[in-house]
Length: 293
Image 1 (cartoon, rainbow, N blue to C red):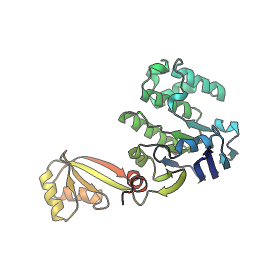
Image 2: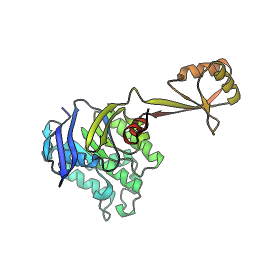
Image 3: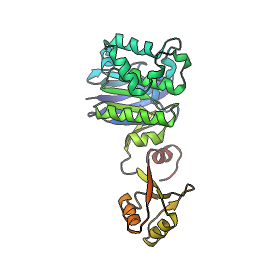
Image 4: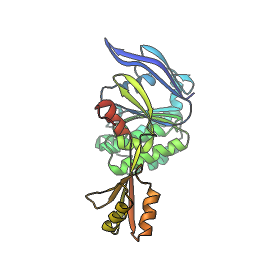
């Protein structure tokens, strides 16, 4: 068993913050933890890693009690950048982890290259941008090649290029057998990572698979928009044209293969195809904003 949380409750004074959380993970996967500020996401991760005590319930991670400190040889937890020391370099942080976990120092260069921080690893953290700090935090939690990785808002402060790099690394880790629980407000990135989401609402957990409500949108650049519109209209297919003069359609209305076949048959060239999966945001709005599906 990778994660087993049963009836976890946490209260601050008279306020119940976590109201009996249950989580079971028995095979490697990526799970997103989504909810507004104050819903209990960070508190849950802190309780799971024994950074704060729980009032009721049990937590087992990788077959051990969550109070067993030996867990951190196989587990890692990415917190926010307040844990970083401004007067130390990125290299200093990674060297400390290597010494504590008996990891060869040669792993530092490898992990720095993987997250793309080689050029500033020897600079003091006080000079880092928000994105650079996120890169360092990621390097710190993957250097021990964890079997279980908990990440609290790993995409905060990342520019689009860095977000793509982060997503690529997380998917690579999953392919290598790492299980991840990712807390995030970035619903677009969540859609690209996983269909399995735990929505946190008022201290309670709602587990859902978005596989059946996720929708893929396509944006296609063609060499003759007017001809493409004529062909699709004659076929009775649903589509629209964006301000960028791209043909936009939804997978549930028209399969990409059918679109390409129609264009080829009528001599319309396709220059570029972009796609966007929409699922997490749709369900989030239903749960937290009362927006109907």
